[in-house]
Amino acid sequence: MSYSVEIINNNLLPLPDELCTELGFAVGDILVCEMNKDRSEMRMVKHKDQTLTDEQILAAGNLTRVINTMPDE
Image 1 (tube, one colour):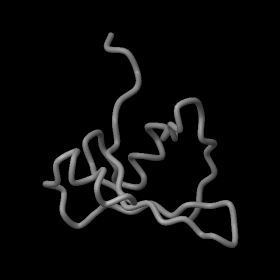
Image 2: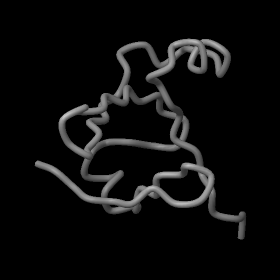
Image 3: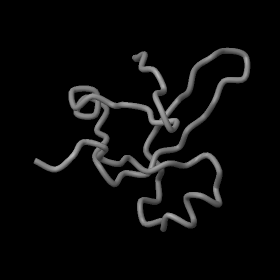
């Protein structure tokens, strides 16, 4: 399975709710991002250790946390 989404301002990658549900991603999840240097695509999977701090995520270089960018209602 593969999906196409575009990176927007501030390098944000919007993940629609339907896509997150299907992939099992939730706000707060830590994802591993793997770039394919021969193609313009990225593979994202849940990291096996979901207990990392933001500093540890930043230090790893290929990890990111799913955040909510929608304003609270």
